[in-house]
Amino acid sequence: MSDGRKIDLVAISRVTSHALRHEPWLYELELDDEGWTPTERLVEALRLERPYWHELTVDHLRQMIEQSTKRRYEISGDRIRALYGHSIEGKLKKKHAVPPTILFHGTNPSVAPMILTEGLRPMSRQYVHLSTDTAMAREVGRRKCRQPVILQINAGEAAEQGICFYEGNERVWLADVIPSQFIVLPAIG
Image 1 (spheres, rainbow, N blue to C red):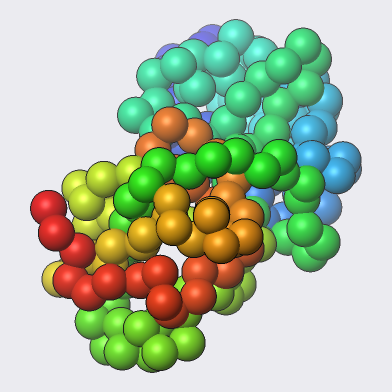
Image 2: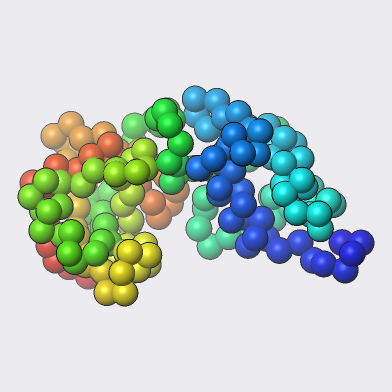
């Protein structure tokens, strides 16, 4: 950058997350019913966000996506979207997919009894978020508490019983709800 600052892809990812998942209107972005927005519009919004991002390009966004350990965004043609984690009003359309047989969910131990009774609901998000392995579920659960409980979700059985699942990325799956009969405590693994 001309002012000596390097583009911080982690910072770009945080602001992109806020723009595409939570408050797109603050960045004057409009998302279509699948969450897509023009990539150049996002770049323009990010440039306005921080003066030292004035040289930000679409290539920086591509780098951000490629270097991330979690696949949170995708670019297709001249559009970009967040793959999951939306809290915006109105539900984004997702395509149904057949989930792995077992998925996991990390949560605070204080709410585990309620989940085992009432099931998992999306709460402030659009979908329930599930992980493909216990390590990822533990990482997600640590956002809620230091020692999360890992619940096992019998996703294959749930899908056979009509529960809809959607692929978020290779390690995250989404569902509208998970009824309690498909949740086991503690998870094995």
